[in-house]
Amino acid sequence: MASSSLMWEKRSKAILDNIKNFEADFICLQEVDEYHSFFDRNMEAQGYSGIPIENKEGYECAIFFKPKFAEFITYQTTRIQGYTKYENLCVAPSSSTVSSESSDVVNAEELSVVMVAFKILKPFNHVVIIASSHLKSGKPDRWDDLKLAQVKTLMIELASFKEIISALTNCSPSVILAGDFNSKPYVHKYINSDNIPSDIDLRSVYEFRKGEPRFTNNVPGFAETLDYMFYTHSEIISPVKLLDLPDEVDFLPNEIHPSDHFPIGVEFEINQNI
Image 1: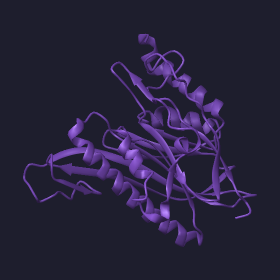
Image 2 (image 1 turned 135 degrees about the horizontal axis):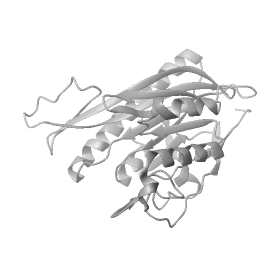
Image 3 (image 1 turned 120 degrees about the vertical axis):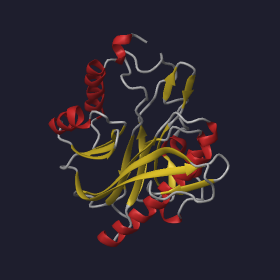
């Protein structure tokens, strides 16, 4: 991994070139620290509008969309802050709520998500919720239960937002969730299970079509799948094409792959007859 591959000036240009080549109608990004200094203006030049979520350290997630393809309805941003004391667990949607079960409470990393409702323009006029989520990394295995609890809270937030949009638009919107979950596969298996709220029956796009990638993050001593995309399993939308990922690659980022994560992507088909 050449040191020049790690320089933001070089990586940023390559990342933007990749995004241009995707020609996607929606782009979900995580860890967008350079939102205003780079992504906002460069994505606007490509015909995109952006909606970010910001925390005290910078911008965590963003969703970019093409206004000529989709009409913005409304959005919601959420930061799910967790608290734990090793064996006992309490999750709260804000840092003002702390478990009173024990004084041995440690402040954990947060899960950030931006949820945006769009109406796909003619000839479809279908309403879809796009969510981009990021769960920070760097915690030891003892935080695994916390991450799972935060994802459970995320599902509740997503179901609540869908209920709001359903009432606002008088329809049942499809849901697409993309994110860097920085956690072991059981978190993705939970989202894929029957334990989530029934009105957001989500399925992993890659698992449904061809199986999860071998890895989406490859650094010295670690190669795992951390990034997933889920969609509402229904007859209204269906995945028809996936972005292929390489099976073998040098450590990330490198000269060919400018991010420390592989991009994942899908082309959906909307059934106009439903």
